[in-house]
Image (cartoon, rainbow, N blue to C red):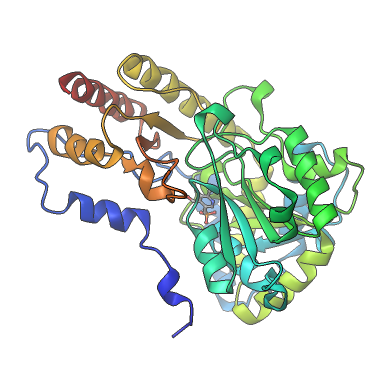
Length: 399
Ligand SMILES: Cc1ncc(COP(=O)(O)O)c(C=O)c1O
């Protein structure tokens, strides 16, 4: 067994299952789950057709580096979306089987244990996507958590991080738009962090898998590669972004994403993945290339999420501490009672499942920044989200 295996924490959904075990939900109400961030809008028809039409590709071993067709489609998308000059796809881009596995594998490949005594940190937001923490533990690194508080607009206060922490950092994880908070890291902060990365020689790994779920064109989240260009860095040094079709295109089951950035990181990561077995099936690559080239389904997605937020926020207004997030599909709502008690009783009385915020955060110096908040994923259809909001309102009013 791996020496650090015991450091892996139970996953938030396992903890939720334990919290709700033995609780009988109100039998007259249908269940509504807002707990899991699994998109429920329809997968694009052209992706289904492409997959079905590519069954002969089952006979082909895919290469880890991916097809030129897919990487070029991704390169064009990146240039369009983040106003970048044309990218040398072979150098800068690598397909991955969803960002989860890529985030995990990236830390294993990049964390240098020889530096562990002086540079032990993988820095990450708190609350977070738990894979950052597990990846750090299994690599033998020390997670260093930065709280995301309401007074900092739910982003870590990066400017308050002392230089001796940056000096001890090997990898900094950003999550923008954030899960669970929905906060976007602004351009000037990205530039500041890239400056710190240069000064202290660490990698900035930016998880941008929610970047396409935004509400108006003016609020389109900025990306780390854009910030590199703004700093005049055409090679995207020390930068790696993680993107996915799961949220953008409602394709969580396709397992398709990519990493892009510094060729000095892409090259060894490709080598690592060749051994790890990270190749994407050819039929998935073909379907993915189409999905990265088509925007109308993504626009429909955004319209649907915008409408759900509008309606749900108007129903919850005044009974819960809720705000429109910068982007993403989560409501990061303050609770009038403890988050676990809220989740348990809401399930019992209204048959609605939400994720306690404390399960996606860690307590540091007596404070868990997820405490007294719940994460609600507005992934279900509009009427179901509205019904959930009405039940949550009734529950809050009954307290
Ligand atoms: C912040 C964040 N990063 C990465 C992922 C992984 O997504 P996927 O592996 O489907 O690309 C998720 C999934 O929920 C997430 O919330």
